[in-house]
Image 1 (cartoon, rainbow, N blue to C red):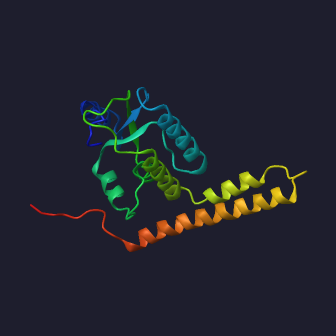
Image 2: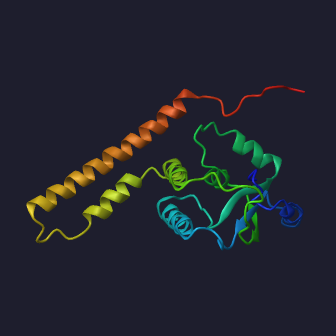
Length: 195
């Protein structure tokens, strides 16, 4: 759960009860409204979920949160993944355990404001897309080139070719940077003291 208590801790008893009642492996919180959130952030989140569902085989629910109660088998499965750049919502879905949902309305931060900027959220979204869709570049190029080419000038056609080329190179560069981070195998955390 988020440390700023935007995920309401009072949901925990309900999540535990749902976990026991349904026999699911995980009880997860899902926000059903974004009231009070900046409109641009809400729009970007909505667009991300739509895009992710179209280009990935990993199911992702609109409004789902990282706030979860998980059984030990699911915890072990999540911890067994050695990824360094982690898109946790995708990971929780990827491991394939059953999930029951506890829905709630958007709540404000108990203290301070969110440390997520639009740029940070964009980076997080790109990590999610890169982690769970290898075909993003192919999809974009196919979309760009699927339009009818009748009547397009040589200049426009050349521009389209360069657009596709740079889009593809940019996507390849992004994936290479992700591979570089994964190959370094840096630990996800350090233990300062054992008791």
